[in-house]
Length: 328
Length: 304
Image (cartoon, rainbow over all chains, first blue to last red; front, side):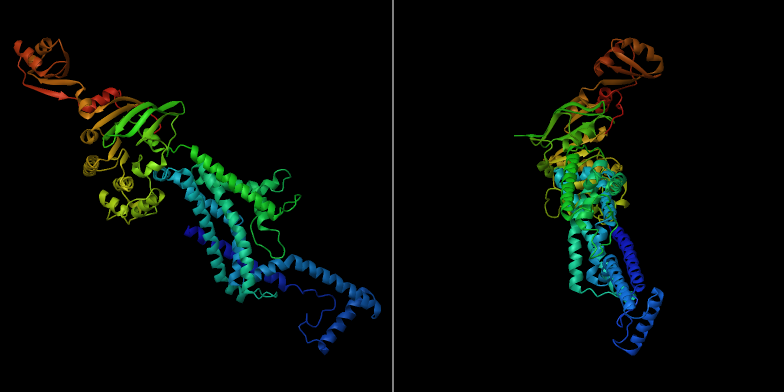
């Protein structure tokens, strides 16, 4: 468990660092909304200052010469058109980049680390972690032959299964919290190393954003835990359990855009429930978020899909465990 | 009134096409120390797994204290050690016991420490289990079985991996538990040990019950023979004089006589003028009986 946590912290920490660098590099190479004639504010010059006016006049002459129009109303009209186009480009840029920028900025607040922590735990990082833990926590009961000892103490197999499942889910939540804690420690380092030219995210806002994502991740972690448990009970060994479950996850990623089956895949349920396409706040994840030609699944579809998945997986695992002979 | 601790009724279990347990019907009374004997692959471990609800029978039923198996509510009264006990190697012996305790029915306060003391593992209790010797693992397995002070102790080859002192210690422990009213069901192929501590035994072979009875009873019914030591020159005369019985030659001056009493052997030889140098009784006992019933003691290979 400790090594798993350490590995996940290392992976996500590096990913977070990459996101900060990427946001900084994207933002620093762009002049927000700057058309042919930048405002004094955009040039960081006092409004109405002689220097500002001089640069604006110079830019106006250069622009009109490039456009082959004379200074005057014709030139002013061309400038207005160019400014409008620049503004439109800016809006587009904001739409595409504001999410990642805000997300990166939120990560610079210790309370905002939950966004990335939850995004990662509700996607491939969390899936792999929980499937590995399920293999060790459940599948290894057969590989290590301890299952006979456990079932000789507690004959109600459903209780053993639910205890395993619940503890696995708690381990997933613990990993999420550890990850959030590690990102909180990294937050001031990111803040001092990367000055992002976007508005700061307040503590309350960062916490609210984190919690909004984290509570959704709890259901996804439950789905991963049930998948891992089911595969462990089916294969009844450590390695087989992990590989079967991992194959299921990969298959669901591949099949997600297919017309008839796509909407029933785990990939689709998770993406829909978590809102991995969200643009107001880029939710960093390692999961499929492109379902073309299918529409992106809704929150409700994701919720129903995950709930059904959990119920079906638990029922299958119970059935399998209740009916199986313990020969190890 | 003595009640039944265990009852098997037509119990059968097949693995693939082969019967591991075949129509086993047997009853063990409360307070008995019962030996369950059989060669490798006879179905002993399968029977124990069926008794604990780890396997589902194809036919028949098992009862524990009158409740049909599987009976999860009764597991708190059963202490079991199935085959080679398995543990979590990264945990200490004490922690392993705690985990097992938390897995099932509640136990009396101080159960872990008490179990550790009983099996003599107190000093090694806080060491990681992976550092334990085979004998220590066996002791820890017994400690798990004893955790809840069970009414019924089910032990599958408990002496495996123990040194002679350990075997003797376990033997005394089981006998003491039996004397205290605990029903002890021991599967083993160490006939000498079973003979010493059990009240009754059952012998199984290829999944079938071939004999059941008191240890003395089974031993007595085994063949009785006499070893007669003679002078080599008297050997032919002795064989002639004892021709009414089964006579086998062991060496040039020793014969083995079956089907006669000691007095008859002595009288026939003396009347013919042959005097034995030595005449000794050889009771083949449980071992001979076991080997006779199980056709040499090694059953067909079978899943355990």
